[in-house]
Length: 123
Image 1: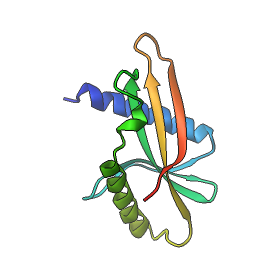
Image 2 (image 1 turned 90 degrees about the vertical axis):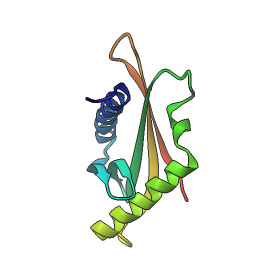
Image 3 (image 1 turned 120 degrees about the vertical axis):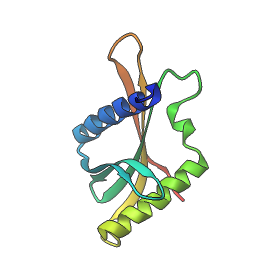
Image 4 (image 1 turned 180 degrees about the vertical axis):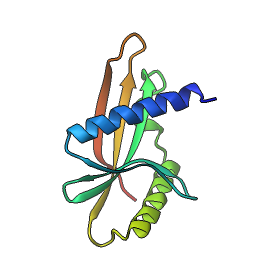
């Protein structure tokens, strides 16, 4: 059985997927995983391959969703992205960046706020 947090995560990823497509991103992969970790979405935005972390929350009582992406999590995403680049033989054809999609959901209706942070971190 799925936990509530996983359900919120899946809902957020679906919202982010549609949002990014509407912005013109070409989504290359969803939930890419390897022995190192997982990347929620991988997309192409103009000349960039973007490794996208999606963070969803109901409210900000514990801080903004993007604040939960620790240095450890950033390193894990970075190393997973390296595996993706090697596996797909993308280097040196593209530029790369790490984006974050932050989604704050609403308990009372289907409305939500969404924020895209391009080039959110780099190592």
